[in-house]
View 1: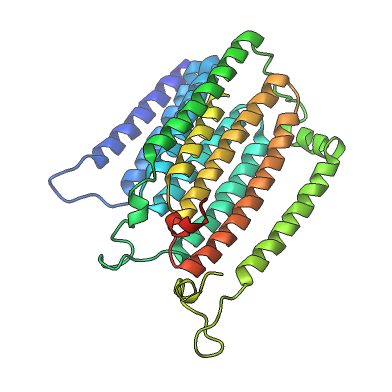
View 2: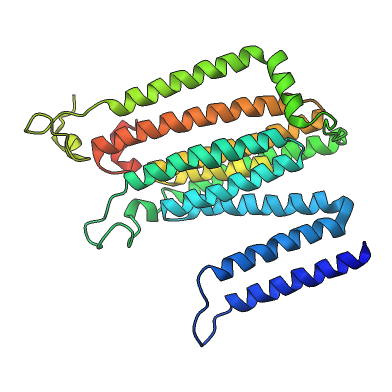
Length: 255
Length: 93
């Protein structure tokens, strides 16, 4: 056991060295594009696995710290990045780290559902809508070369940041003080039969009405979204011609 | 649980600050993430699965809200031709 651990350390160090060497800027010809990220990812994965093996009991704490740093960093980049597509990509990072946190807490079903629903469906929809609703500024050439004006300056940043962090401070202080007082209950995950089975049982027995309501809600939302997006705006001069985005607004008169 | 609060707060800041309609909705999704983390942590602290079951419903509602919100955003974009939230300034009080 100890010998294999030593070899694992060597392997991870070698991969890390290769990754860093490939990533460093060199005066000569650059390496191929795909090699560097793969090596970096392999090195990071190896490092995390190694950390888990080494720390043993306190691996949970290390993983929690790592995942929460990733989640908070990703969230900060979501709200501050000027380009919408990068915000969506950082949101994928946030979703994945949150899913990891849930798996860490024993809620594997919720973690998997989060990845499938959020990162799979909702984010793909977001990226599609971002791509479809792009517009180019008149001065710069093309839409991907410039950052739009309303993306660049935030709206009243000082007041918003103050409000947000006063919220975080008060609620966080409350949470921390209560946690310290309650002296943390036993964090026992209901192992045994597996988390998915347990959640399924609880959902169908205790929360059956809520499940039905959720189904109805989903159907209503689907019908509503189709109804909203189908509505055609007032036509142009020829029948059957739909106006370009914005034309309807310019021609409309306020009631 | 502090992490959930921090995520929620960051989402609030982003929502109030950005002007791009789509990014505003993305920040509400960040808020949902914070809430989910909080719920799971509370379920863990209590020892039962109620936090996770409720978290599943929150996930459903978040998906629904994202879909409907994006449909509304698409309609708003078609009407005004811009994704700027300031374009709808006349709706303010």
